[in-house]
Image 1 (spheres, helix red, strand yellow):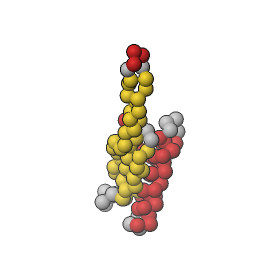
Image 2: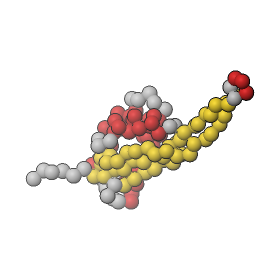
Image 3: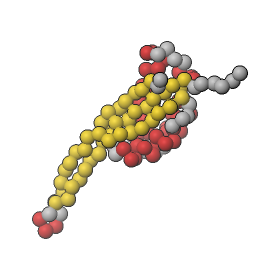
Length: 115
């Protein structure tokens, strides 16, 4: 059963966050953090915090070894949408939708198939 950490209402659209999440899914935690930290995306800093929080949850609540943890689930779901309007020509308006997302990271211990 994966141990989760969730960052709610992160101020970036889910599609932009998902680009980074595809890089880390299925990797060991240390490799995932190293892969994200070189990314120029503003979401990288928040993702590193969520991964570290999930590792701390696994270490303190489930007594797991932090060196043997692997990211088993990583997803970003839609959250609040702030709707604003911008004036256009001829008295019209166009919508501005500020999207946010919930980031969920799940970690679990790697299962070794060695005999």
